[in-house]
Structure formats: structure tokens, C-alpha cells
Image (tube, rainbow, N blue to C red; front, top):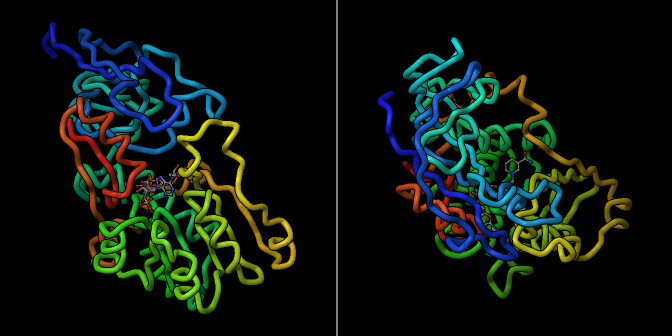
Length: 336
Ligand SMILES: NC(=O)c1ccc[n+]([C@@H]2O[C@H](COP(=O)([O-])OP(=O)(O)OC[C@H]3O[C@@H](n4cnc5c(N)ncnc54)[C@H](OP(=O)(O)O)[C@@H]3O)[C@@H](O)[C@H]2O)c1
């Protein structure tokens, strides 16, 4: 790689107490680094917009606050341009945590090689990446739905849920998606072909949900928390399983407001409900098999995927903010 190449980076320069936006980041330039022993220099091609880093932009959450004036964290895909680790030769495509910048020196142990034969590069941050893996294991291992049962999922048009719902349908499960607004509802009905789609932003949300759940809920994949969580509690069947995947409704709230909402302890006792917390990393040893299975379902047309792609490093703050709105479907990415 020729000397003097400039690396553009977005630094976190202000903490957020509500929605993230351009005002929290500053664009800067520095020379591209050279990798030390055990490191790999990667040219970043796509950055993944994921909700969890929002928690590192303010204090008091379960995750440690990111120091100011550091490159904003984020997962991404890139191509190796210089390597000090034989596992990652020049030219290889890799997945890792480059952060919001155009080049990154990354410790090789934090990288994973991408198998381009499984699908196009952007899909490796969505259905063939963390989102697809979270969908696969949360649904099949922790939700364990049986054919004929009903599974409810919120943030249903998003990256994880759109795949999870389709995996459940492949297994003969009735899938009800909860999402907000017409773009997402159309996607659930017309592209993903969920059995029912319910708009949590509509004034008659409660009656829409009741109508969609004539046989109650056997599995609830909760990606959101907040009001949609509370609404589903009224429909739980005996021996229902609740898989706690995320609480995106809380990520932009001050920490002292997070633990709000109705409490449901007696419901869970009376209906012998099983709750389980879920972290996709717990299943890392099984990722290769799961990815092969998801890739096969995509090839067979049994899973459809969609990405919403923004262009250029400058678009990151806007794309990140879009995660907390209802205008995108599928995986949100920035192409560099
Ligand atoms: N535990 C794990 O291992 C793991 C792994 C990956 C992801 N996750 C979690 O899974 C969830 C979804 O992640 P994703 O990457 O697939 O994101 P995503 O669903 O593609 O995008 C986020 C969606 O959440 C919904 N949303 C945002 N703010 C909301 C609010 N205040 N109330 C209700 N809905 C809201 C929006 O759709 P609507 O129009 O429906 O509002 C938005 O489309 C997140 O909570 C994330 O942290 C967990």
C-alpha cells in the first residue's frame, strides 16, 4: 500500500441523551496506519448499522461508555490490504470491528474470514452475518417453536426479525409481526408473507393484535421491550417462551427511565412462562453450520433478504439514526 494515503474517520465527540445524530460526531483525517505483528490492515467496504453501539454513546447503560474523540465503534466488512497474520492474506475479505473509518488496523484474532461463495458481500452483514445468526439461534434454540404454534416478533421488518420470522415459517409456525408504519407493514405482508402484520403505531394497535392472535402466543421473540412487550403479555399461552433479544425502545432513553412499564410476574407464574436472555455470541462454535443452512434457504428462495444501503462515510450518523425510525426494511448498511 502506497505511503501518504489518507484515512477518513468519524470520531464520537459528544455523548447523546436522546436520538443520535450528526452533532455527536466529527469527521477527521489521519494517515493510514501500518499493521503491527498480529494485525491486519483492512480497507473497509461496508459498515453495519447496529443498535447496540448506541448504548456506548451515553453513560449508565449495561455497556461501558465510549471515550470521547475515539473512532465510533461498528462492525464491518473489508478487504485485506496488508497483513501480519498468515490466516488473512492480502486480498481476502474479512468481517470485524473496524469502526467508522475507511481503513483500520485490526488485531487478527478479532477477524473472521468471509466465504464469498455463500452470497454477496453486503449479505454477510445481514442474513449471512450477525443478524441471520441471531435470528437462527434465538428462534430455533431458545424459542423452540413447534409446527402449528404461534410466534410473535417485534421490530419485525428489521434485520434480525425479518429473518427470524421466515425461519419460523419454514418450520411450520404461524408468524405474527409487529412493526411501525406502512413501509414496514407492506414488507411484512407482501415480501416476507408473514401470517399477520400489526402496526404498533396505529391507534387501534391493541385490537389489531387481539385479532391477529386467535390462539394466543406460544413464542415471543422480544427485540424491543417497552409498550409492544407489555401488549403481548396479555396473550401469552400456558408454557409460552419469551426470548429476550434486545430492548431498542430503551436505547435512547436516559438510564433512570429504562426500567418502566407494567410488571407481569403473576402472569408468568400462572402461565408457567419460560424467559431466557439471548446473546448470539454464545453460539459461536456453531456459526459455520448455521450460515450454510441460512445460505441454502436463501438459494432455495425460502428466505428473502433486503438491505437498505446509504453511501459514504459521511452518511453514517444519518444511517445510524434511521435505525430508530420506521422507514427502512431489512439490514441497514453504509457502503464506503
Ligand atoms: N442479543 C443479541 O445477541 C442481539 C443480536 C443482534 C441484535 N440484537 C437486538 O435486536 C434488535 C433488532 O436489531 P436489528 O439489528 O435487527 O435492528 P433493525 O430491526 O434492523 O432496526 C431497528 C428497528 O427497531 C424498531 N424500533 C426502533 N426504535 C423503536 C422503538 N422506540 N419502539 C419500537 N420499535 C422501535 C424500528 O422498526 P419499527 O418501525 O418497527 O419501529 C427499526 O426498524 C435490537 O434490540 C438489537 O439490539 C440482539
